[in-house]
Image (cartoon, rainbow, N blue to C red; front, side):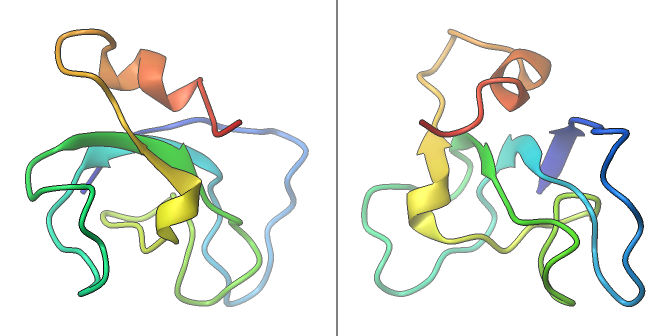
Length: 88
């Protein structure tokens, strides 16, 4: 579930697409092959907003590949701080 999203002013609206790139939140559901995260984990990542009709961070929930998501070490960063980290 998304808690924080960063806003990039140069990303134009795209008809029928969900916007939003960098995000932070909590895991509420995972694909069957994801083994390195647990429900409730604090995670952050990047999603290709304005590219797909069913993906983008400007939503209540984000669906994103595991390789674009990272687990935030407990007690280290707020949601706002984690959303600024992106993926590297």
